[in-house]
Image (cartoon, rainbow, N blue to C red; front, top):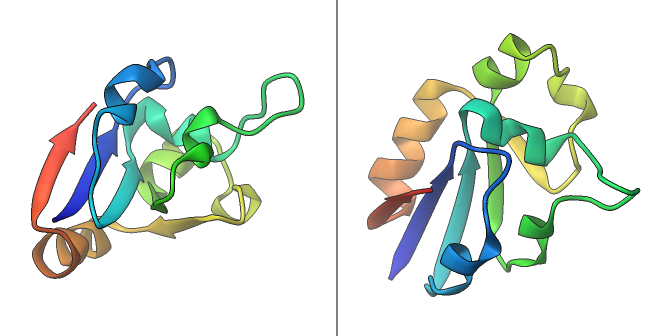
Length: 98
């Protein structure tokens, strides 16, 4: 299964995400979830990067929060709404929202 997980909150627990498994996983940061792509706590990147996944952040949500897309973690690709639709329609079979 190919699973896309939307993360819309910055303060989530890893417990839920740990229970999800897929042959291909994409984590799409939206809303306040985009802070995972840019903020380091105690010098460490978000715990979500411990997952084996492809990472995306919604460019519009980054810019709304004053985050320059060029300054996000190098493992994260900034994407537009259109790109997210393409990911949903072409790359992932199932969707989850955390």
